[in-house]
Length: 428
Image (cartoon, rainbow, N blue to C red; front, side):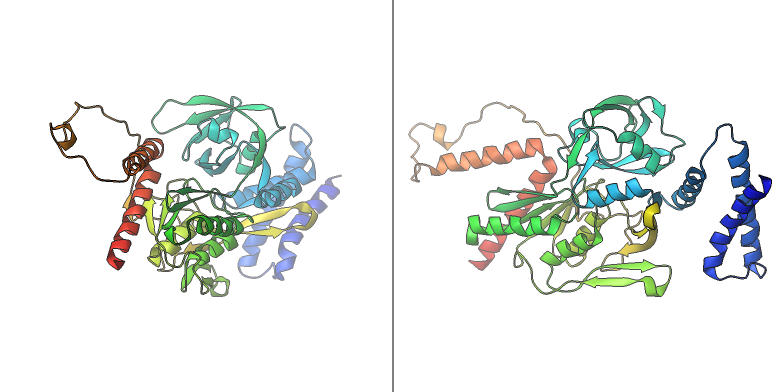
């Protein structure tokens, strides 16, 4: 029995060393072999003496997960089920609470809630720290273990303990559901097209193209510009971030990635053709805008193609490569960093908006009724079309309602409308 265990330990060392073609008795390889022998000894002791029997597969998967998750918050091991879930998620539908998360100081940090999901409706916010799941502490779990606990059958509930800023921790009970991510939502705000991108998946670029086509069909030459809302967008597929940026750029670099070796670096450039032919763009970002969102905001900002408004983005500027491991699943490994066209690193810095607009709540203050020309005795009546005053009043009310509901979006729409008015007057 002792011989069998030692053989397993030796096999682990050999499996790691042999693919590199290294001589274990020369130079640094001797130190590597010594450390791997320590690992093999630990593996053997746990396998033989732990209070409960644990399968070899579980021990080895735990060792792999520990090695990867200790590198950075985004490298991880994906078993076969997790790998399949990730592939489903990039297609735009998966099960869960509806939050994008990462690990920070042993706790689960919410990167952003996904629009119209149970977590979103429960009031979970970007930046929240999750400390307990159904009363059990998160500390000590890795990210994949925490995510597994948050998943479960549709219709079941999970109580999470949330720490938000300086507030006292509080509990939120959320019912699990099938999360279908509609990557792009759009509507018209007068002559301005509003496009909300919730994630970068396979549906994103076609969704934006369809939205712009609808704007042009409805408005024709009156189409004034676009608000591209990337707030609380946790990112997604790199190729979609590149193609969305390319949709609004005529030329130039979109993003570069730089790995440890020069041959691992790459640059992605725009092709000729701007979907909206130079019309103004305002990009909205906040602390929940990460990764692919930051690539788009950074590219449009550096090329002065858009005005970026809101608050500083999350700062996830690293590239994860998913490497399949056959039937064992896959590993997600950080292999490079993102850089904007001007050479700025996004990692841990984020994108600073051109115009800072904090999240705010407005209220209408009632004041004493004032007098105007119309109140004076004998004042002349205005000569105007019967509906003109009513239309202007309705527009003012709509703008006020928008400001009360979403202050950042209201300021973006105001800015775009001002740019459109200025350009029209300049031409005239």
